Image (cartoon, rainbow, N blue to C red; front, top):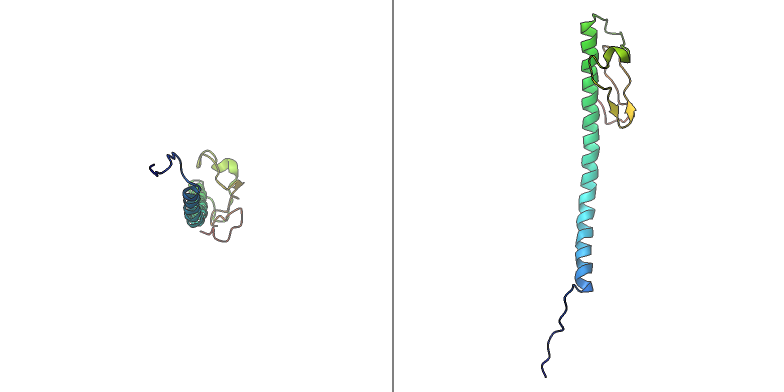
Length: 113
């Protein structure tokens, strides 16, 4: 009589649990980095939008020979100077006066020009 190994064609429970544990540890290490990267991207988009708004308002003021404290209307800027008015998340930016910097509509302290 020969003693041999059973002919199994699958993974054992120990192998499956080990792989699941390794995947869990890798996810624990990776997810915080993804969240941090997404927050940084949102901040950079907001700052880029504020720079664009500042440029659009300054261009409007220069083209129309306005004073530095004049504030344009939305119809003055869209679509002649900017195709679509930007938003931070789902909240649109307020239109600043010609000499002022725009601010984040969500009042996020890290979103500063």
